[in-house]
Length: 197
Image (cartoon, rainbow, N blue to C red; front, side):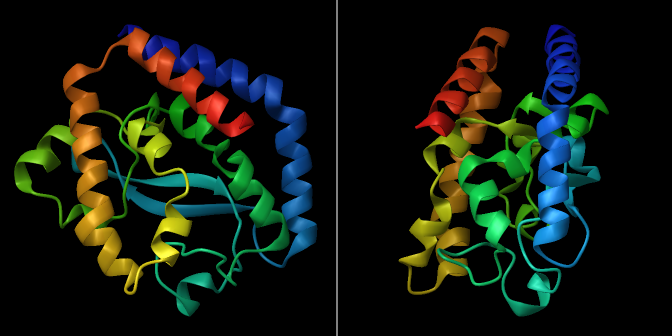
């Protein structure tokens, strides 16, 4: 209950304070490339229920047709505005709305697309999906430069499925087992510190 209240208060204040930035980014995305301002994608949330996550669009509208679901290195599908938005993590800010509406939490395991969740080992799937997914978590910090890491792999998607995803799952499971409001606040501060760096 305390975690949900914390989420509602922080997400509400965040959306209010950041509204000028969100509006400016929305205009930039719209002027920079054809297509919608927001990118919506089906992800798997708490108890396996699917929901649509919100981000500022950072790729061409035809990106799904031109490549894999994961982003690899200096992906040609990324727009000019998208490069800055991804580097600064500002593209993730619309997820404050997802937190406010109850689909996500500020801190929790990052939500995956259904095709990757289908590959989770059963025992970890149940544990990781027992909580609301989050905007940030320990795996987000550990794999902040995931696309550059995958760019060095001979087969990036295989590297993600066989190496990166299992490591992220272990971190997510550890988070769920040891979650606390104090720990969430520390993760939020660490995330803000990583963005500034």
